[in-house]
Image 1 (spheres, one colour):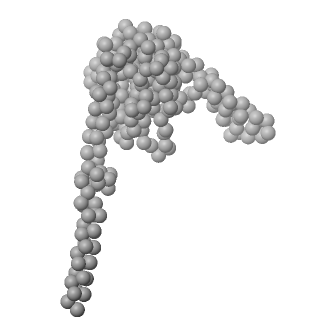
Image 2 (cartoon, one colour):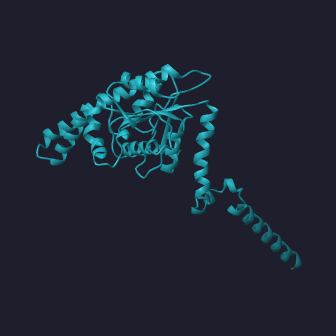
Image 3 (cartoon, one colour):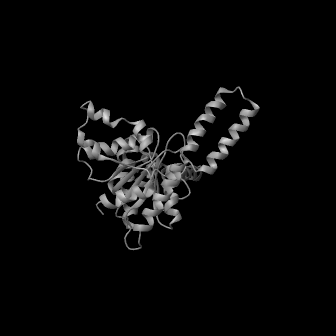
Amino acid sequence: MESEERSNDIQLVEKNLRLILSSNSYDLAHEDLELLNSDEMRGVRMLLEISKPEQILEKEKIISTIIVFGGANISDSLSTKEKLDAVNQLLKENPGSSQLKRKKDRLENLYAMTHYYASARELSRIISRENQIKECRSHVIVTGGGPGIMEAANRGAFDADCKSIGLNISIPTEQHPNPFITPGLCFKFNYFALRKIHFVMRSIAAVFFPGGFGTLDELFELLTLRQTGMKDDIPIILFGREYWSKTINFQLLADSGLIADNHLKLFQYADTAIEAWEIIRKDSSI
């Protein structure tokens, strides 16, 4: 009887020890994913998103970057033409579809903008070839890491056998990194604000191709930083004068007294890759 009780006690103790060892309270704090993903640890996660890219970029000796922003839907001419041809074929089979007609109109407009994809690729190739050397990497292209203009810019650096950076973001509509980013220099963020910090902190120029809400958000963020003196004087280039002149009436803002006249000098226009590069080369600080 006594031996049976002793055996039961041993089993209970061993079971309790197993429970102790398997409890997440016994995990090292930095290995406890449940803890790290809790609301209380948001500050820790934010610190990690600041520190991780910074350490890697320092290790890679990247001293300056050039931001390239633009629409995710602007693709190369071949793939856009294929999509347009497919919609035209569907319209032949269903000519009364208002949805297909709308899709066709949008694709025709995007096809007319495919030259921006080619220009972003060319500009990135020129910048990368002109500046990157083994010992010191300046003017490194950085994008949001997604498709469209972002892909084109990373692709231009890829064409030149040079490094480029992608700052991807975790969003409900999953955004996958494009395949032209340098392995080891593609980062995934949870917080838009911290992603923006990494866009700006090493930048010596920014080029904005036509884009939607995301591009406009980044443009006004950078213009505000320049307007308020929170960011050094860097060239901000709006690529495609016709598009940007129609999209934003900056002159109206100045005429209305909402911005100063000299704030119109915070940005410049360019319509070719060479023109944009000449502005960067002339005005950037490094």
